[in-house]
Image (tube, rainbow, N blue to C red; front, side, top):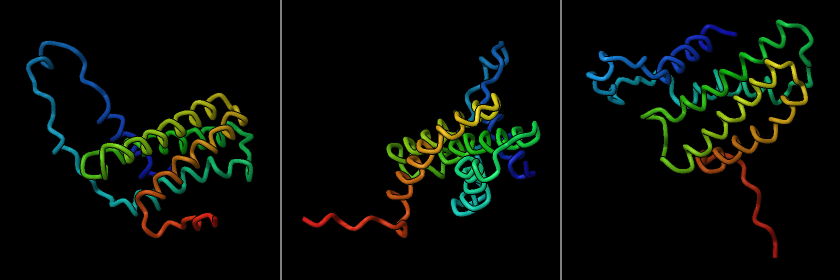
Length: 156
C-alpha cells in the first residue's frame, strides 16, 4: 500500500472514530465541520486513490492473489476504496445530500464487501463485488461528469 493510502486511511479512521465516553467528552461540544481540510481535489482523489484501488478489484482475475502478501495488498486496496467513499461525503466535497451521498455509500459498501472477501481469501466474494462497484461508479459519473459518455437515446 502506498504512503498516501495509509495516510488517508488513518485520517478517515480517526475522523470517523467517536470519542471514548467519559465526563471529559460529555462537556466538550462536537467538533465543527470546519475542522476538515480537503487537500486533494476530486480529480486527484479519482486518479491517485479511487481508480487504482477500484482497478485492483475490477481486474482481480488478471493476477489472482495467491500469496498472503497478495491477499493483504488486495484487502488494503479494498479498504482504501471503502474509506474513499467516506472522503467523498466530507464537507466541501459532497455535491449534494441526495444522489452524491447515495453513490458514495454504494462505493463504500462495495469496498467494504471486497475488503471482507479479501480478508477471507474468498476470490468469488471479490468477483461478486465487481457489479456493485461498477454500478456505483457509473451512477455517479453519469450524474456528475459532464464528459462521461452517454448512450444515445433509443430510436422509436
